[in-house]
Image (cartoon, rainbow, N blue to C red):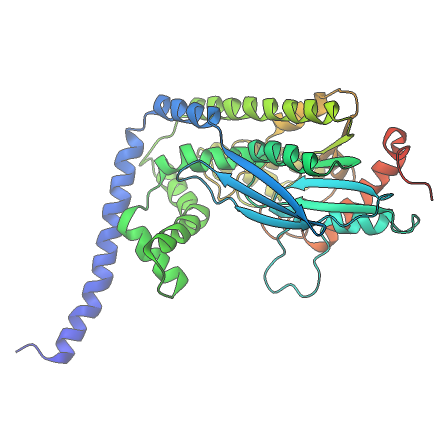
Length: 402
């Protein structure tokens, strides 16, 4: 006769066994799919995504508050905020600066007490030190946006109220991450279906709608679990991933990014607004995942290297080769592109080069994760940006008189 104690014993054994079987089946299906991956189909899907209209921004102002609504049209794409509001209160004589960028400029870490010193806020304070509060800096730092989105948002916000200066903290990393998330990474997932939903429940530890659980589990798995699994599968020769298709994907994404930047530049020139481009930076010590063993080897060499410039070179090349990391960062080819821009009323604040020249760490001492900077890094960037603006006579000539 089956007693309650025996039934409990069998249940305790059965549930872990069922989960283990589910994991084996899920990963086996993923391996089967990857071994038969159609790289050309991915490229065509990526091209179709890049050619689509991504979204539409609309802006209204009421009581010195700018309301931004953004409708994102891509199904199964990354999260994009659909509503934000910004204070643009300014006197008629104020010098108005718009700064556009990713979540690095607006998302403070959990449990941080007080106002987080994002560099746009610090910059405003520094500019106003000797100018009797004549500068107003509006921080349009919004998570998840790429150059397609920002192109639309710049046009709408400028149309609503024209600034004296636009500063653009480069978003090319988001271009790569959004494209990879929507069109590429999902074809290389090893954890799928029911197992993903179960993982989400364990992660959240609370009942939520199935759609929300699946969304959260997808983020957690692709950021922390999938990269490790696919790296292990490559190490043990279970799967082999080709390098050449990803070079083609990257160039395709970069070509549309360059096109978007060209359109932004043309727009600001037509509006006669000076544009400052900032080459963005990231945590080079955050582990990249790409094609094994190339990415691992470069990362390992960089982490062991003691000479600063060789270390940065190895780690940068490792980041250039990453594919499956939880969040992709800027590629070296984008730095090359930004440094080649020579347009009237367009200026490059080459933050990456300036920090390398000063032997900045690019490590977890400077960042919380892949790209979110700590307070000291924000303050340092504000100092360098202030110095750049003041010393550039073409820009500072338009500043209010002291």
